[in-house]
Length: 190
Image (cartoon, rainbow, N blue to C red):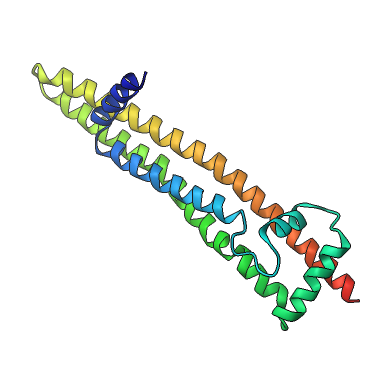
């Protein structure tokens, strides 16, 4: 089975032309970007409390008062002025930077597929212009390049867009949870 997979990949790589290789590199870049977003969603730089406590507070509507009191005490000790702005920056600044970059990479996938389509069509039209036996090979190779790169660009783009959109939704939920925690702490102070 693995041998068949490698054979198919070899065919795609040869018939897909330079655009297919660019799409393969872009797919690795997108995967790396999505993995870094996934890692950042775990809140690795969580200050004051542990990652587990932050995730618990940011994903729940009802936060235990003892956890809020623990957070309030730690905020007063570690962040004397404007603690929520500083914590927001520590928790979410990486994600704020990484999402736009990931969406730009994802948007490039269909465009690279389109570039492969145009390149394949140019090869096809050059083959049509030639009137010899090589013309048939050029025509079929051009159509093959156009179809492979179009399909690869769309598959990469759609799958990555769905994954990144889901992660963006999780990020927005965490941000809303942070606003709830902030409001709860402010109520404790009053």
